[in-house]
Length: 188
Image (cartoon, rainbow, N blue to C red; front, side):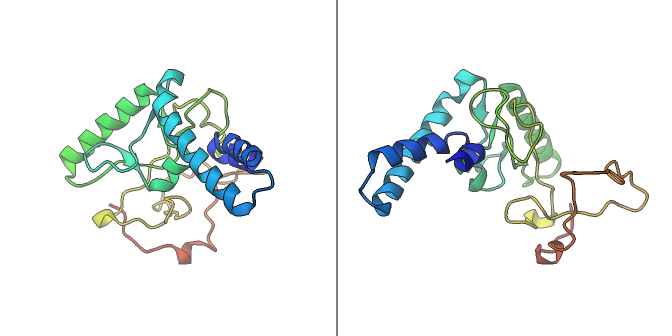
């Protein structure tokens, strides 16, 4: 339950209610009730997030505007931003389309739909709807990673390396062992 709350902000609540409604009814009943409740809370979150100063990034937009990298970020309620950031992303998307027709602004993690200060793990700064991770652009719209994360690009020779030599725990790593599993695609 705590894991679902940390991952989705509302999943723990759906889990608790489903558990209460299906006591002694079996795992299948619990799973079905949980999925229905999670879907209902997900839809409610999308409708009520503006009251909390957040708007949802489109999950499936076919237009020129920003959209999530994949449905994973929408299903987990991780694609909410302030209206100001949403407007900035829209402007970026329009500008990108004018210069590179067919290119899209793809959003990874943004924030949760409710309450400033609720951490969006593993991020240390995504707790107010004012930060967003964007996917890198690859030629022909390729996606190197199924989630948008963990497929790293090496800095060009001579480029600055702001995280080089960081001592202790750092959330910035290249995962060299994982890179051979990522699709090969040239950056755009």
